[in-house]
Image (cartoon, rainbow, N blue to C red; front, side, top):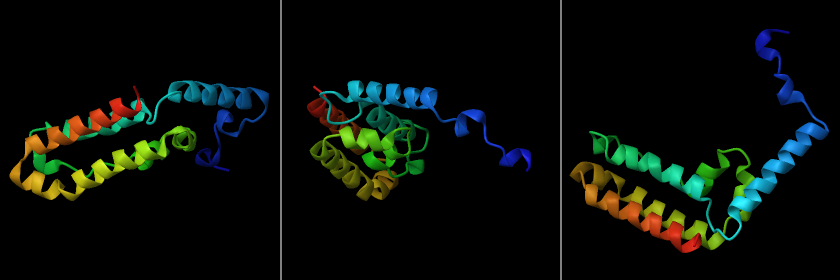
Length: 132
């Protein structure tokens, strides 16, 4: 068995300590999401990538934004975040992202910074609406 085949002890560990850590993390997520329709942490991270590309020297490098669940499921405990997210909030947020992504080629071609800023403002309004 080569070094690359060996698992780190924490990856293979199971038992009370591992399960206890997982349960503590799940409790923290439940507390974070209490009264919120979207994970502010995950939604803001998703939007920060758009901001970085939008204000970079070349709007032509702007890439389509990930939908909320795609971004969240890429993260640790993504399934729990999705379970605790409000389906209506996720749907509204995704509809905005889909609209932005559908217009992205025009935005890049015309270097339409205002359209990008409008998208970000509308996304932040959705976050505020569901996380008040």
